Image (cartoon, rainbow, N blue to C red; front, top):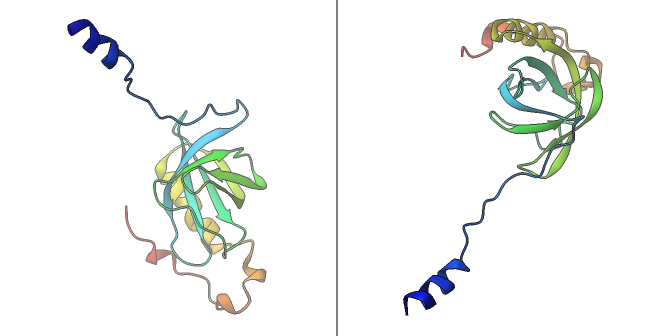
Length: 140
């Protein structure tokens, strides 16, 4: 009877769920902070070295990454699609700045990009002519 129990239970295994391997040319980053207004600019923190990048979305009607969300892609400066595993979709983004070393530098860069939005001409009625007040950024 004991042998039968061992044979039956040995067929049961604990499955381990994990993300598929990531392409060597891709980076993994997490949304560390974001400016919750127009323009939707956010800071990502890279998993492998703890550095930061400033990213903005290109389409506001698409799903927007949220705080803590994992992103996979090429985070070199420029326009591209970044994979969002949680939502199983690609977000169209523009990486504005990368290789930022500290959180303070990332905060300053975010304030700069919010104040000097390269996409302001596309905003139309979505944004007044006044620039956003950076003092309104919530403190971390």
